[in-house]
Image (cartoon, rainbow, N blue to C red; front, side, top):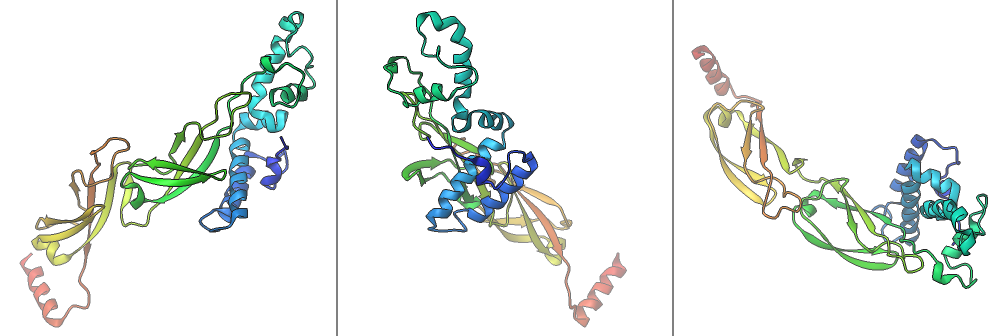
Length: 294
């Protein structure tokens, strides 16, 4: 297995701080994001490498293991366990008896099939590495459950995206990560959702908020208006003397609740009263009369 220099991928030194790692990742992720580089296989591969590097280096414990064990950082604990058992197993010809505390390369060579010493029956099974991916969707796309085909390591994977997925939420696709070692189970595919919003709605969990302009006359006298929801238009009666900033609730017209079929949050309408401009002489006269009545 070739050594992967995660620091080099992010353009950093081994002494980089957590903040420097975060800044470098964000800068490079924006530069090589697939949405900004459509049909660019080089950018796509670079984006995967950047995410992989960040996954390791942004996690203090993973970073420490990587600094110690290199590309085999995920199996560092197995080596430590084997080393700990060494003193108890030397007499029985344990496969770990020849590995010193200073040199773990032989141990990893055996575990990853690098040797043919006849000890294959004693090889430890390792779970494959988890893969991490990001999927950018618009708010409208996660209003309903739908299927999407992803390409991971040149393999097409058909997944179902449940309605109501949150921004930043991670779902696990079991067994679609790296291959296991020595017959071990495959790792998982972890998908982080990045939800953009091209709608007029503001989302808060399963509730939606919409600011609705209302002219002064309808606010004073009341009347019927049409309100947009995520699944169509709704007619609604405005009460007379509606105040600026007042809020109404349309029950069940919000966003789907994640993995709760048929359950929705609420839609809250916040009224913004629009004052009339460029009044005619007659309108000014009438408003003057009204002011005298008050």
